[in-house]
Image (cartoon, rainbow, N blue to C red; front, side, top):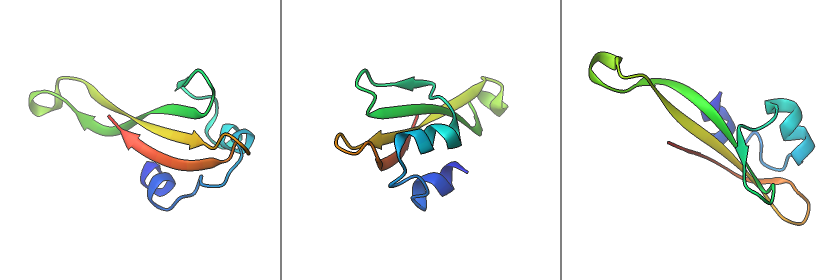
Length: 77
């Protein structure tokens, strides 16, 4: 799903309320509300044989300042 949202641009052009309706409330956002972060478990584990725990990634949705529409979606760890 993360790949689909980022690579195929499924969220681009969506309004902030539409993104909230689709993904729910963000796990974090910047103080201005122009970027939402969602924690994502891609199934990667840290440590030998994957015993070190979950390696979380974040998908970030950036909104423009004028119309509050999604203009960029990125993934980071």
